[in-house]
Length: 112
Image 1: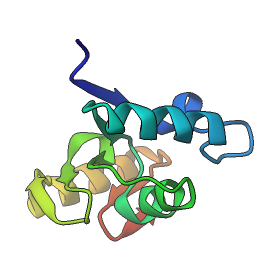
Image 2: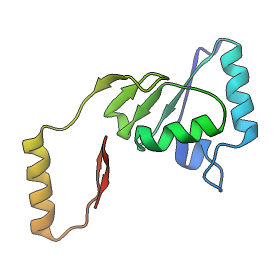
Image 3: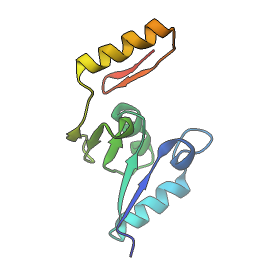
């Protein structure tokens, strides 16, 4: 028996309108009703994921920021694995030195 389903958002759970379709939401709710755990796993942050799952009328734990944070269905952080600030600063300096474009994804937002 299936015990857990983990789904990415972009290109998987979200449709071409960037929302969770009623069909997908209904399937998730049916799975949850039958005891299957459902978890969203995404490179997106909590503030991007939570409104999408709320609009689809279900709740789910979340693996966010490409695994850097794990949150329960209420948004409580269960696990966080950020880069040390010194490492992040070194990476940003190197990218700037090389003239490379970068996006830094944080729990506070995306910076480019």
